[in-house]
Image 1 (cartoon, rainbow, N blue to C red):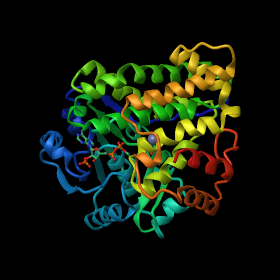
Image 2 (cartoon, rainbow, N blue to C red; image 1 turned 90 degrees about the vertical axis):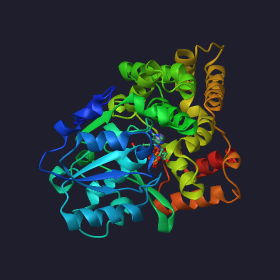
Image 3 (cartoon, protein in one colour; image 1 turned 90 degrees about the horizontal axis):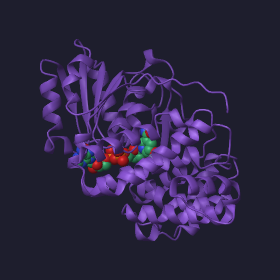
Image 4 (cartoon, rainbow, N blue to C red; image 1 turned 30 degrees about the horizontal axis):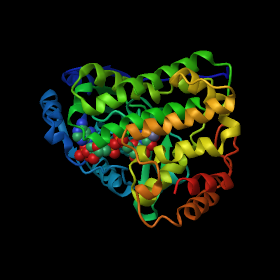
Length: 388
Ligand code: NZQ
Ligand code: ZN
């Protein structure tokens, strides 16, 4: 097992009705920015629950953070915080709002061009330099409620880039599984597939000595397979909802990646498809993941076979046979979850996709992705072309 440090300071508050605790979590004297997205929180009662829990607080509202949050929009909130000397942010929404707030938190006191936070991947480790924030999660998928990473799109250049650092963990996250009842089916499907792929990125590499982490990862995958298809049909079933939501957090709160190699190439390629065609994040992963497993088969086949045996109860005469069946099962599962696993089923005029992505990766010097740094530019081209 590799050496590791496990640091996660998020006060994670899970369950029905937990929003009531907000007043015990948001500092009383704070000037608060309440940040949200396109307005779903007004339709499902979340806004009302929050504002009544925070009665008497000095609150400024900032709405309009879009899915795949835009740098340009977030800078408007940065401006408001600077002008009004706001000192706490409450993010209410899915991964996009929470990620957007992480960027806002980092950018307020950043000296220089805030786009460099993304372009130069600046790491934020000093909590005194960022604005503290808490979250109320409304969409289980990204794990953003319990991690310190974020993804932000620069509209002007169509770039989807990451930021993060230990100073960007939420102070607290309120996670009430009943909020998923208002989610459109498409977003529920996305949530299951995003969480599933987060586990795969940290698990589906090569055999190693971290036995417990493998079992953690497999149990999250099995739980998502068990509850995923039915939670989409019946999100008001609390047993299904609570297990789905907790699995999505556990998939990307740092625990399962400790002491193990990880991949993340599916996400890196997938982000480009969202930047180019605005395909939902999870749907890009369902397109790219299985093709990446095929192209990187020699590197991944041993772990694919283990995954097939332990997660899907696959049997076979050879590692290769089990590994191939495991990829097929994964694609089938994604189809069951409503994913269309070709780029052409999700976007139009896609002929130049591979050229575009390959050029981007070359410009950024991303020539060696994956757990063995062997997802080369040529492999990226092959994976993308296989996904047309
Ligand atoms: O904006 P509103 O009106 O709130 O509507 C949202 C949005 O349209 C809606 N929604 C959210 N909660 C709802 C709801 N509608 C009804 N009822 C509710 N309870 O759902 C739509 C999608 O929301 P969004 O936040 O964009 O979805 P998601 O949580 O999937 O986040 C996706 C973003 O997170 C990034 C992705 O790249 C993408 O930008 N990721 C962040 C990660 C992280 N921070 O660790 C890791 C992930 O791999 C991912 O890259
Ligand atoms: Zn993801």
